Length: 314
Image (cartoon, rainbow, N blue to C red; front, side, top):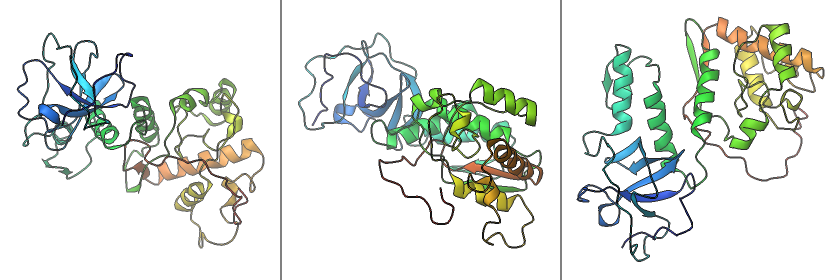
């Protein structure tokens, strides 16, 4: 069965799941109908979603010229007419022995003098942009339409990780992921000019100013710091965990011993931000580096009625 034909209303939206094939391709490799390749549209490029055939590896996409169709309805009749591309875009990793994400990992390892064995690398390989893009594309292709974060979020998260990376890494705290951040929030909730000026003057802060639902982002959970001034829940429980990791606390579970990073423990904004920055700086000094396993925000908050926590009051 072939995929649903592309509607005449224009190009597909970002995040759409597609079947694509290029001129000159005999359709022998693609696992979709008639040899089409399964992929997702991400920031104007198509990224592969065919395990073992084409995963990640963004390729330029022209909806007016490329041979494509939507993948939502695999039982629909094939498209009556599809525009063929003038030339086949350069594609790599179509064979089962060469998966783009694995190859990108191998390339990143080689740049650091490390050895990559399939999906494993012994040592830390600083991620290249190609590796991050391949991982981002693979994640977006695995998620439902609209659930994959924008590429700009991946770059912003990376800038936060790099800013707080210790000179000598002794311990890596590995979390699942940051929280999914909508593109409009990333723009409207960036640190306000007044907040940036105060952070630089009072604390010498020279890190990223973009908004992401990531604990490193000072605007996350602090609406007075963001440009639109709108509330956001933040992650108070993780601030307490980080505070415990960065301090010599005999018993971190003693009631209220870590409440100075919370609004009810330190109501004055300037004092609370100073405390949070002290926590992040202390972790860096101790060689503790907080990273996320997934490059995109995997957890997406759903509409719900939250109650105040009985333990923190937030």
